[in-house]
Image 1 (cartoon, rainbow, N blue to C red):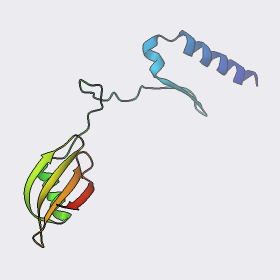
Image 2 (image 1 turned 90 degrees about the horizontal axis):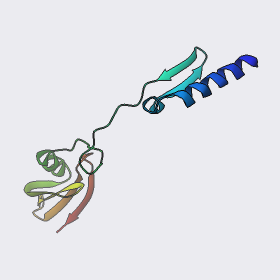
Image 3 (image 1 turned 45 degrees about the vertical axis):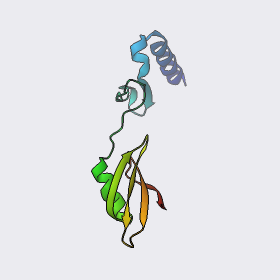
Image 4 (image 1 turned 90 degrees about the vertical axis):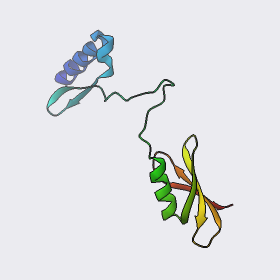
Length: 112
């Protein structure tokens, strides 16, 4: 019981006395003693403080739309979070497929 109080007091003292840059780190008390975990990996941000994610290319969006039913791709338009792929399906009708720019998931499909 006394050992727990000493460890708790030491942990509190370390947390209060730590400089600001170190406060981003976490402290873990486990069976192997006290452990200071490094800060999380820094993420890249663009000018608007939005997390930058890798996106698929318009060519990949066209290929995904072809898998979703478009036979001949007429146009690929980049929108805010998606690509809008228009073309003709195998039956000769106009089709529009919306593909998420980051995951490549088909999020919409309609005849136009």
